[in-house]
Image (cartoon, rainbow, N blue to C red; front, side, top):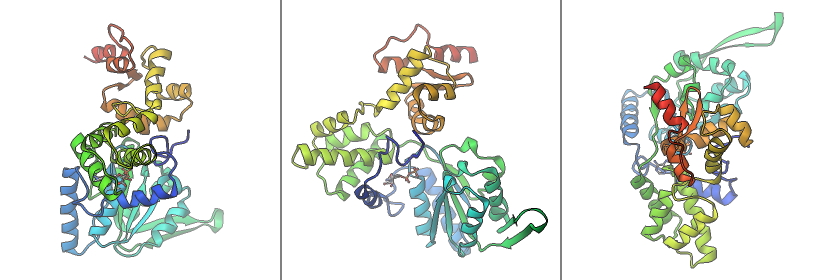
Length: 349
Ligand code: ADP
């Protein structure tokens, strides 16, 4: 499966209706943006200071697992700054010329949002250094004796970037986010319940409080997943019930999607099962695991592993991935007296 964090199984192929619903559910201001209080406080200061100086806000990096609200924050920053936002992503910029064209079209005060910035190639990334630091771009056009080098000044702009893999960013790039680098954490269950409750109102679907709890508890502490589960529960309630999401209908809808009480989907369980049964609980390298699962390494690392680690089901050790005894228990298996993960812990001690 190729990685597209916005359309994989955790976020299935979007229907037209889903896309417009997603826009309706996206918070329109910082008050509607639930949680992540530390990040919001910092951003508000940055925004206010920039406005006072009548300057564009400084370059910002958001990092953290998919679906936690990085893109939404970029939109909110643009809105608060009354700036236009131009959106692109690392995989969409394959050539230096693509990025140069985008940057040269930016107007004063614009925000350029680059999602998945860790996927920019080194050559493309290097264009960003002077653009971010000294508002200029240097590039060479043509080859051989006819090659021409250019140094073009830029209008003041802000780069807002998002990544699920901050460790893959080079340090020269990371250090140029002068406004700061903000980590988004998984949400608390209370915050996810607030999001589900608010969004049920926007979708005009009556949802019983117990049903909100069920949907929230299986949402992997992630707003995007909470939205998706709410929409699927709404579909189910419309087809199998009277359009009201009751706890029973919510439970049935999520069971039909094979989402268990912790929010694990079949691929998550297959990852744990493969590590335990094929590799004796690990350690197993990410590449070997991905090959055994017929998935891409990046999909496993970026989409599935963060939540499995958050639950304490998986350890990333220097020698590879290990299933913890909690993972065995979740699958109804008996953990070995000391699982590979525990042994690794002991070695480290
Ligand atoms: P990311 O860019 O980190 O993958 P997005 O910003 O695209 O995540 O968020 C996905 C969806 O989740 C948004 O469209 C929005 O509806 C919802 N969402 C994200 N963060 C929040 C939040 N803090 N409060 C309410 N809804 C949120």
